[in-house]
Amino acid sequence: MKTKRLALYSMLVVASLAFSYFETFIPTSALLPGFKLGLANLIILLLLSHDDIKGAFAVNATRIALASLLFGTPLSFLFSLLGGTLSTAIMFFAKRIKDVSYFGIGVLGGVAHNIGQLIMAVITFKTFSVLTLTPWLTLLGALCGAATGFIALLLTKNKHINKLFIK
Amino acid sequence: MIKKNDIIICVIVAIFCIFSAALIFSLRGTPAKVIISQDNTILHKVSLYENREIKLPHNTVVIENGVVFISEADCKNQICVNTPKISKDGEQIICLPNRVIVEVSE
Ligand SMILES: [Zn+2]
Image (tube, rainbow over all chains, first blue to last red):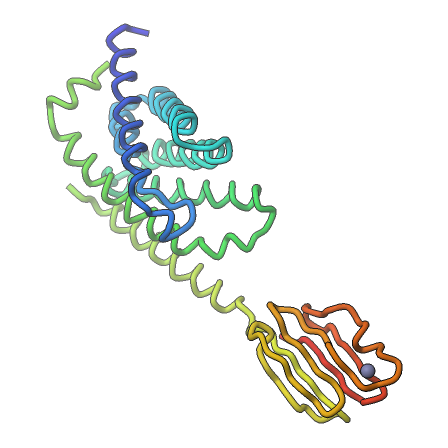
């Protein structure tokens, strides 16, 4: 790996970790258990916009590991990892759909993230009753995904930002 | 900027939300009731989740935090008082001497 790429990934991990840290101050979990804004999704979208799927997975997994160590629990690590990995994978495939922008990709990513968390909740609590949260987590995931997707859409049009990501 | 399939994705997600919410609301059963009857006539039909004490001529029924039991009875055998607390659909406490049936029902 080129030194320049490594430096970019390190910078992106720090940036997305800052997003995760910022989210711990917003009591979104009071609204719905486990619900977060998912601002780090923005970083993943920017990496995917340059077809860097490996970078997207690596940066996301590193952020999740560090965030769990610094201000999470082993259980929150598993929840985030499943949600984040599913979301990244879905957004990677969504990019292949014709006539779709980062807005739509972000929506699918946000929904996929929360569906992943729900699957983890079913495994953890060994009950399907947690699935009653499905409509609300899907809706909120879509709204947050739409917001980060829209910002990503604007940022990918910025040539200075694009220059950073070019391999 | 925003493209055609973005709208389609949003519509599909919205339909999924509405459909899953409708499914959950339709599956949600009516809250459990406690039915107290004597000689085959229903005397009381109350919520299992409302704590209260119901005094019958010969028995006292207590509903407490989602469980039901008979706390006092003037019958000789006291079987109804010694019956374990009930909480699940279909469970019953019977006081044969007084012909009282306490039943949990959805
Ligand atoms: Zn009795």
